[in-house]
Image 1 (cartoon, rainbow, N blue to C red):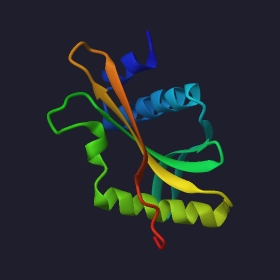
Image 2 (cartoon, rainbow, N blue to C red; image 1 turned 180 degrees about the vertical axis):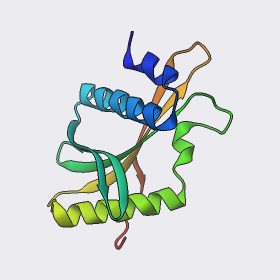
Image 3 (cartoon, rainbow, N blue to C red; image 1 turned 60 degrees about the vertical axis):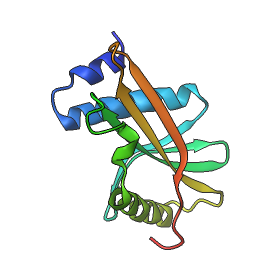
Image 4 (tube, helix red, strand yellow; image 1 turned 90 degrees about the horizontal axis):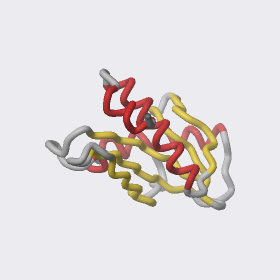
Length: 132
């Protein structure tokens, strides 16, 4: 049984989020990303995954949805969430300076009608603010 199956059975949002982040990590790694950190928490908020794709540092927000009743998973990252991510990323960069480019990615996991999962990665999903 795969972690994607576990994701659908996780009873609580936090458990499902953790399972979703694990699936996202495996999916990204299989596509050449290198995971730098997981579940980074600071005074700005939380970053699900910090990863590298080439010389780019990626702050990855992971969202999972069991149904499309409220739209696709990636639609759950609105302006308020983007601002929190930007603040958390700015504080992360103060503690861990990065000389190269940075971006915000959103990875969505949506349950398909056949019970499988659709994985959507939006690279550079929103701009990196000049001040967070």
